[in-house]
Length: 122
Image 1 (cartoon, rainbow, N blue to C red):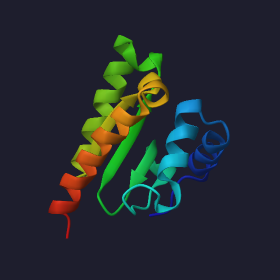
Image 2: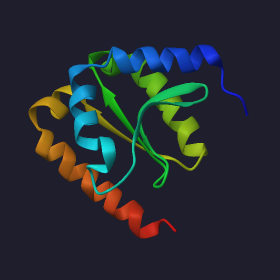
Image 3: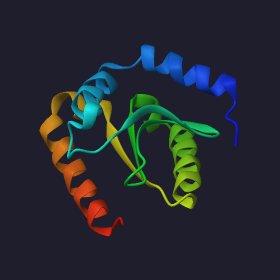
């Protein structure tokens, strides 16, 4: 299936305009630095672009800013999560401020998630 070129271009733009939390998380995940897992950032899973994706584990990591706390944001996120879970993907979400100020807690939680997924993956 060919991906929409506009969606791919938008993902590329998002990579160059990443938030501070996304930049920090990418430095921790890139180049198999976290549990020797390969992550992609701003990865297209049409019709969406997910913040981080690990194909091996079927794991999507979303970093959320304040817009995700609104009713509209929560509704959109629920719809998006339902879509991704229907593809047998697991979605975990972390708040931007937690990534920046409680990085160890976020990584500890992510480690547990990845460890459990590794146990059940082929």
